[in-house]
Image (tube, rainbow, N blue to C red; front, top):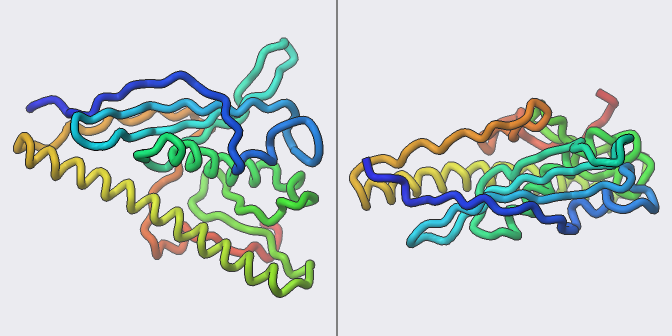
Length: 213
């Protein structure tokens, strides 16, 4: 069997501000974290013919009592992307959704209380019910956001499946063999990757939360 042409090239971590996680950065205003550092760590997969792929992880750390820093949240992009920026955006979106769930009580009194939230152990996400606002326009916007979040998650899962099938097909055309299985990424116990789901899986939808679970 010939070697897989994809070559992983780990890259150094970078601290980059992204809109998705802006509400968790800084010391002022209603940010629920104090002095967080948001670091993106990527692996760049290079191919002799195809565009590069990026696998991205975001690490969020805060100062500890010893004058150092400790990671409090680590999330992974659901799939590789051809663009470094897209991979960062996907990782940041995953982190934002689970951070909003972890800090839901703090977020409930901010202007960001209607962001999608998801527990790291679950596939489905939820958005707070806006009925108390008595704003029909906001209610319809939240319903639209829930649908978009469901569809985007499903699209990323389908993209991951298509990328893998395309990789197998190109290996057959080039070498007559299937590519070697990708090495699984060892995820920390508190940072599992979001599992894959089909589009119509009711356990993977984003819903409007009508009561406190």
